[in-house]
Length: 88
Image 1 (cartoon, rainbow, N blue to C red):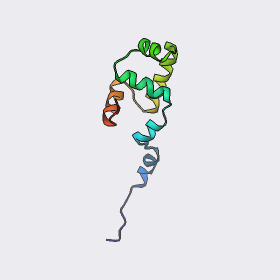
Image 2: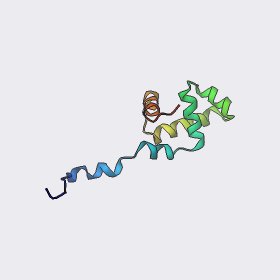
Image 3: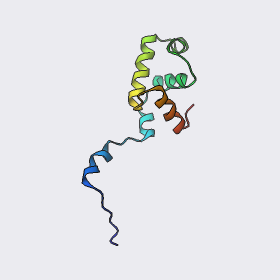
Image 4: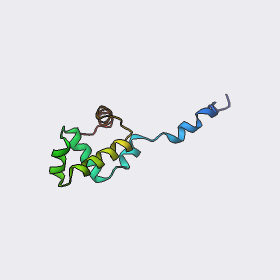
C-alpha cells in the first residue's frame, strides 16, 4: 500500500555477513586461483607443487586459504562452488 515492506530486525545481522560468490573469488590471490584450477582438474598436491614450482607445504597453505575464503568445508563444496560459478 505505502511502498514499504517489513524486514524483521532479527535478520539484520545476517544481511551484512552475506558475501557474494564473486566477492569471494575476487579475494583470491593468483596463486590460490591456480591451485584451485589444478584441484578442479583432479591434480594432487604433489602434481600441483611440481607444476607451480613450489613446495608441497606451500600448496597446502594456498589450498587451506582458498577453502577458507570460499567458505568450502570439503572438496565436494569446492566442486559445487566451481560448478555454480562456471569455473573450470
